Image (cartoon, rainbow, N blue to C red):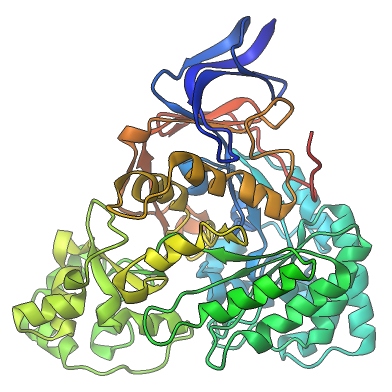
Length: 573
């Protein structure tokens, strides 16, 4: 037999948690047609002796809604073995949208997802109005990996209610009927489901709560009914970080799921200190699933937080008038100024001059949870390495220590703000949670937070830190690959991928596990209008394959662009 591609003599990881075994994988017409011992010729062969061969990774939580329009590469995700990315998360996106409301959605995305407005204005053609038209725009593009999209709540609300939706007024019966009809239309056109957010820190660039923030339970229910009317799909939800407990904010979504029979996945944060609140959420999940539901908590496998630096959106001094005087200078000139004793003294003795639109900026002074990030990209640092601890050891203030560290590497240094998931300065809680059947990995946020977060490298982190390097609580390679492949594929309803078996989509990775290394994030200026973003690369990916075509070899992208829009849930072969 003749094949398009055969990967020979690799250590095959099936995606289901089975013990790896040595064998071959054959591909024809974008589908796996042989696994085990394969005889026959191929147009291309890869010798995978000593290498892992895995299904392609599925990332459930991205924001490539804009990048999938203006770019043909979904990196950083596609640089870390991801072959399917789900976008439209957190209920923000670019459709449906009337021409008069373009600025509203740009304001929302600039604030919530830290995408510069000029990037969206220059990068998006806005040649759609309805959500089906937006999907058609995606379908007409070329890209390296597959993408799927949720119907986002905030654009839907603004499209139906206009300024009343922006102002977060209650929806009328007529509004609800229209939202339900549009949700049905979106799912019938290929939406993977519906996404919403009630997170208080999700604010517009102008500092206002996003349109979906105060939406009532009746609104969530009617949109969910529209998704069910259209054939079903996943509800994705970001609850507020609980002060009084998860119960009130999660219950409205769980009730909607019970009414409609739809699955739910929601973001779960583990607070660094204080009484744990995550057990309450997991108890709710257990109760709902015992009653017949399908609810998963979405957990990130390393700290949730932000990157801090002089070239980035957040640093400890961004609100200080004395720093603002030099903030517009090129980095080299700014660093030269900051090294002057009189400038240093002036900035360190200054006070904030106003409030930021993005409240995450305040976290840039949470000294106990901020750490220098070196070339080894250590995301589980010792408490002794925090800015607060380092300052105590030097006998200086945390502000002084942060100031000096940000001037390292001629001002290119970055600090890691580990603001959640780092309970008791450890990832132990995360490790126990992500092994549960009612938990799925997510929150890579690729395509967003361009100047603040670079978390879409988490598949590489899982395979290096959790499945190789961690001193305790390690996962097996088979377990780690399962969490990156079949589990998220099942949660999303993408049942045609995530497994190494005949008939499944030929999305694959060939990996040198021993050589895998996650590099420190870097800053690039490759967005529309020369916009800035964080990027992160890795060693160890020998080949990444989408629909049988090699999109990257040895960390370098090829010219292949086989990625497609995935329209809705997909049946198993």
